[in-house]
Image (tube, rainbow over all chains, first blue to last red; front, side, top):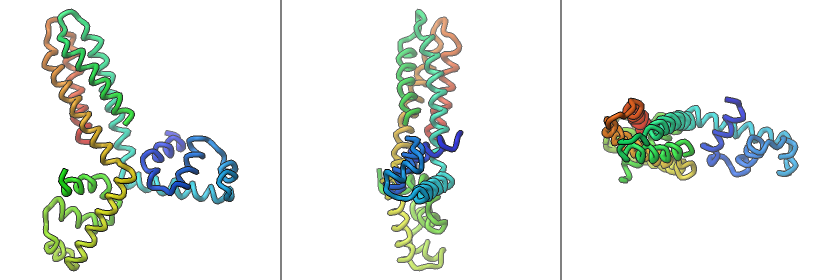
Length: 121
Length: 121
């Protein structure tokens, strides 16, 4: 996983522990792809100030993930949910055989909907 | 949910952000059901000191949950996983219909295993 993607993911989990200013700068830098200079201009602080702020925010989020590991836990759950979705999809494809009980097709469809929500949760 | 159960759950998510001493005291109090006096004796500090430490730890974890909401997110995911497990169980029970492809029963069994892991994750 690229560094950028990892920071974006950590921002999703731990961003609310940052100050609003820090969170915004990380968001501009990693999600909106603004340059340090552009952020500096918008925020009315120096380019170095922006860089320091972002570095501090990154370190804080990496430290939280190192201790709590919640982003990793979610990623594992999301991969499991994806596998569940695919299995349910296969079951559903087989459920329109003559003689297949409707519980099979209906159950598979509901599992697909739940697994889809889980992947996005 | 009772207050005690909630603190136990929060300890599972956010306990690693506490100091080891704080984490142990909360663990003794909420999970091992020791009294404040018993913990005070074990730790060699006053009963009031134990109480203050536990209260601070609780406040810190409640504040983190208030900001990040990760314990709640996990609880919702866990409830979804439980529903998936039950649906897959029903599919499995119906999977011996005449002409049923083995993918249906096998897929349902694998979904049950994954949903079970998800509930415990």
